[in-house]
Length: 69
Image (cartoon, rainbow, N blue to C red):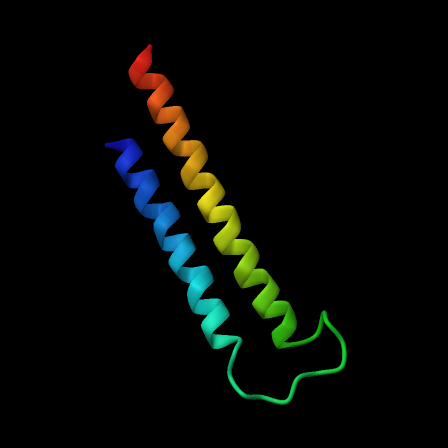
């Protein structure tokens, strides 16, 4: 049951990252610097998706190891 709950939480995190990326693509004039605007939001959204997918893979590996023991 804990594994299912963790999987759902990770999937919610991935969906949140995708939403951040989509919201960051609105047609606003982009600021000049990378760290002060939608570029940062887009980078953080991509990082959230990548880290969420990594967490999902690691969790799957841990569950598989627990089944084998």
